[in-house]
Image (cartoon, rainbow, N blue to C red; front, top):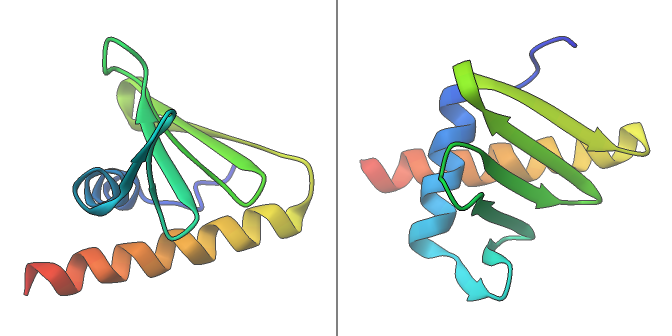
Amino acid sequence: MKNDIDSRQILAVYEYIQQHGEADENGKLFEGIRAYSDPDGYTIYLEGSALLLRFGFHNTYHLDYQHEKNKEDFINKLNFIYQMANEAKQ
């Protein structure tokens, strides 16, 4: 799989959602993306737009989705939140 998403972006978005998202029974939700981790914290998940991103060991990730449009929508949301995270640092 081509690396469409930078691992730093994934981690920054995950942290931003953990800090600013609204808690629900499955993690934290922000701008349509849910962020959570497995119990040991080694694997994190970002979920939204009918797509699941699993990020883990050695900064590798896997995307599960049915349609290319799901991936496009998810990446757009990811980029939006990443931009917000970067602006918050300034």
